[in-house]
Amino acid sequence: MTIDGGRVRAIFRKEIREIQRNRSLLLAMSVLPLVFLIQPLVAVLGLSERAAGALRDEHVLLYLLGIPILVPPVIAATAIAGERQQGTLEPVLTTPIRREELLLGKALAALVPSIAIALVVDALFLIVVAVFAQPGIASSMVNAPDLIAQLVFIPLLAAWSVWVGLAVSTRTSDMRVAQQLALLANVPLVFVVALVAFGVIEPTRQLAITLAVALVILDTSGWRVAARLFDRERLIAGTRD
Amino acid sequence: MPDAGPALAVDHLTKRFGSRAAFEDVSFSVARGEVFGFLGPNGAGKTTMVRTLGTLLEPSAGSATVVGLPLTADNGVEIRRRTAVMPESPGLYLRLSVRENLDCFAGLYGTEAPRRRIEAALAAVNLADRAEDPCGTLSKGLRQRVALARALLSDPQLLFLDEPTAGLDPVAAREVHALIEGLRERGVTIFLTTHRLEEAERLCDRVAILRTSLRTIGRPAELRAQLFAAALTVATAAPLPDPAAVFAGLPGVTGWRADGAGRYELAVADPAVAAPAVTRALVAADADVLSIVEAHHSLEDVYLELIEDDPETVAR
Image 1 (cartoon, each protein chain N blue to C red):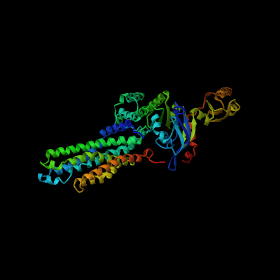
Image 2: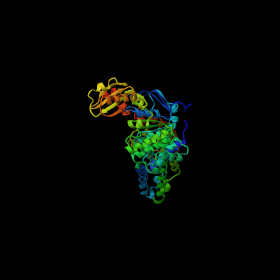
Image 3: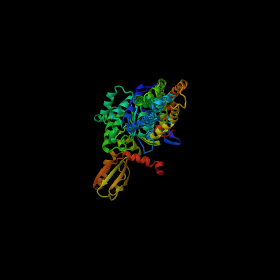
Image 4: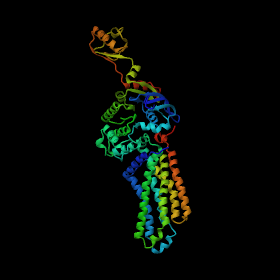
């Protein structure tokens, strides 16, 4: 099977335009990152310089990995269910597009803004801590392994989250329900991230590599699983032969 | 040779959803350049037929050839490349402008010179001046025109129009009719589903009437001839004293019946032969003739005759 880049780009461009003009979606995409930004900031900015030592054992920055887990489902879950609800899916499926191309275009349109938001929130967090936190807090909190972990895991977690959102979206007829189910499906992952961030699970190099490899495998297979779940006939007729 | 032969050949095609048949054992063909009407009441299976031939649904049994290609999952992409479907609901992205909607579909069809194609499609539906308007701000009629422009983007060999004037006011419906006539002149094969019978009569070369199974197929005039015998309707100023004496034995007249005061319906073999004889007989009988006209049965009469005689309708 060959993937036509032109068709993937057409879906991607359309999706990005729609996201830009969908205020409720933009609001939903903003609220979750703000929660993840403000909550640790309040905690960190309230710390005295003496707490710097204790911070070295925690990985507050990793807490922000909740953003690439929770933002993509907001977009991805509406991708198919939303089109179906608005009656726009049928015209798209009458074109030569393959389901894999449609899903890839939609996945990229959810992935790119999610990664961008996660990186921007990370940068904001670091800037605010560097400027406003007590001296010594920033240096004890920010370290190279955590920064590298951010850069590696943001796209990997976001991609996994996108496929979960798309898979749910292909099997749900209501986009609000799809969003809620997709968010619910990702809660355990946020829980794991929180446990790592607060030092309950020790984030070793070996654990990071194992998780990264597992996510690469899951992300690669996620596309195929979502494509299998995408049943053209069920989506159009609401039932099957 | 994929481009030879009919645009559409359907052979004993069936589509079931579980135990319910949407349509069953349907066979017909559509010639290239033909405007083919597919009529039937709500739930007759018209939209399911379009979706099946448009490769959105898989047939349960039977076979079909669409623009020269067997209707199989493997040919889905190529069939969709050569055809276009305008669904009953326009299905536009309401937050995007008309041009952005068309731009998306030009990309999906892989249209060469997309800007030029978009301008041509907009011009074809007289929407060039509304190209930058968000589709959400357009009236239902204008949205339907955008959907038609979208269907024209790929320059399809076969165009499926599913109830293209459903819900439109008469002016908007007339505009869509004019666009379809324009497409017919360009040689585009059109498969039109409708339950507007005057629309089918005006636009279609041939029609088929579906009610799960195919009830009849042919040119509207042929269907009228099949179902209704030729007849003359005679109107006189006053009832004839002895109509049997006037009409019986006239050349070409095979029967007659009174149809109200001073109105008579004459069954004739050939109206052109019978009308002069009837006129002479009426004049000889000293009748004040108001009119002698050939009875005209519309496609609606054909449709109602077939649908009302249908056991399913009778059972309702």
